[in-house]
Image (cartoon, rainbow, N blue to C red; front, side, top):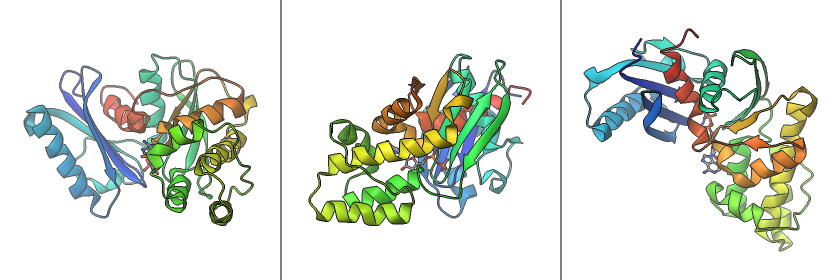
Length: 261
Ligand code: ADP
């Protein structure tokens, strides 16, 4: 399918819908919007928006692939691929073939994915029973701290004296944060403490004995540089974050259109 044309990958995640247009293996247009009911219409609208932005027409799209929880909700796609395989392919290709472990921090789950030297999926672990470490956890924290989630990375890194957050359960952490705020503890200390607490949790899931180099962090929360640094500290190894880490799964879906996967 469409090796020479415009391929589209749509990742219908639990929290965000991501779309990428790929041409000559490069992302030429991308967008993420919150997941809302009526995902098929949202996907159609995004596709039209991408075409308009690129000055192209629908007949110039070679093929469309869908992935993510909502992949079955979009009619007329040429391929539906599960998000773990799409993640593996997308990150492996974007890493120039060096990725062997992926930690994906999505809106409602965290996955640790292991890849073979050829970039094939070996296995994966998922934490989806508990919001700790997921984007949702940070969104709850953002509300309590009255600070947008995309400011956490910078604010958390500024702080050399993080407060200890003991609860990883979102409900308990919520009340712990409320009481820390009431005591007048600086938000920067709370945010840095949150990053450390979440990083411990993610490192537990990842189990550093199972990790192989190179390790890549992706998913929306990988945009949080403070969290990425805390994860590196917990795992005692380098963790790579590529630009636009929220789009690797959609990119993998688009690239699966010209691969055997
Ligand atoms: P899913 O695929 O499960 O829908 P995503 O990988 O799209 O999830 O990640 C969504 C999460 O990413 C949201 O919960 C949001 O808080 C987080 N996120 C997105 N952009 C940023 C950012 N710039 N900084 C921190 N977190 C972000």
